[in-house]
Image 1 (cartoon, helix red, strand yellow):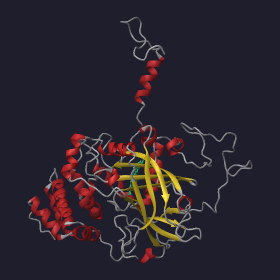
Image 2 (cartoon, helix red, strand yellow):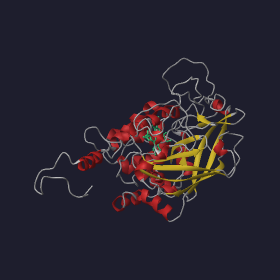
Image 3 (cartoon, protein in one colour):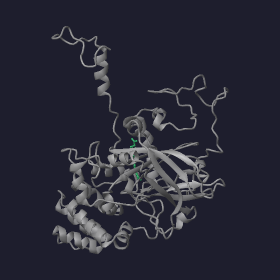
Image 4 (cartoon, protein in one colour):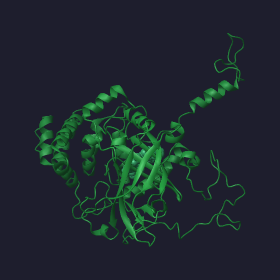
Length: 475
Ligand code: HEM
């Protein structure tokens, strides 16, 4: 090509020519640069690193990457915020995503969690509605606190997560200063076939640090990309962030009689019932060389398990097992797993064939099973689908069965009264009042006090009512 600056024309003043293949390629490729965004968790950033096992966990899981103290597994981590688009302020009040990919010798294990141990809804049926309420109005294209509070206050199961979101944990200082949680419950299975229910807690070794609401808002004007930049620069400075992995492990038989439904993602398992057990450490020590190739095109799939780890009856996990692969096929294409950042380090054997951007082919190997020509064979011993027992019951659409202490307001009430300091409580009240004051209709404010915050804690409800100038009886 003779010039990067000038298109092909008939003389200096004449028209462009259709035969200018370089210009056409350049313009046509340019408009095809973006791939579809993630449907939410759009704005994010990430890095590579490793996971190192620090305790013997073979009594609980046969997962090979966890079964030797000192063993290291390469990883990719992507942090994100939920509601905003690319370009949105990193420090806006929001939940943060904590998505992990372990490149294990048995294939990729993806654990897609958040910086909060609970979630807003407990049934996948409500998930798209919840996300719609967080994003933009259909008519104006504006975000709407009214829509958010309308949804939350009509969905009392959200109270625990909204208490966390409205606390200073909703504005983490950096991604390095927050914990990560599976939030969902998963199953571990040991080599003897014994099963356990587990929750993952990644505890930051940088210490938890949050911004106040005022600090977070002040940052909008200074640096929209504050969190993305902070992670990048910390790793460039060789200040490698790290997290300690601690597990809560519940014996299989405990689930049925536990005081809370252990599969309800809006609840935590109190640590006095199931203390956390440190088992490993995650360190991030390498920045991506190309953001698009390694972070935008990264796909995390809740259905990517390895032997020894599987889903639980947590309805959210089961719903999510469909959604992430579906999103990857839509965003990146059916061969998304062949993009280098998504490729497992182990060989992949299946009978998938062709499709757009297929890079690895089966050559002359059979493309159907069963076959007589030595194609890969399923291994029912090693890859037996992890399962559990369910009582025979009629198929129905209904809520989870409540356990003895299940109540949507008990755990956020305990968080408010027993875990938060007086300063935390003051900030919580201030943040809720500000949020409820931004275009939220009076009747929704009243519902937020009467049917929501007063049920979390009567003092909290009374304080909010007072600040909003509401006469609603906080009870
Ligand atoms: C049934 C409920 C849910 C559904 C249907 C759902 C669906 C999705 C989809 C389709 C994506 C985009 C994935 C991609 O294109 O790569 C996504 C991203 C994400 N979700 Fe969910 N989700 C659900 C619940 C949750 C929960 C409970 C958590 C946390 C515990 C969570 C954490 C995340 C994170 C962190 C990402 C961003 C992953 C990344 O960095 O690429 N989601 N979700």
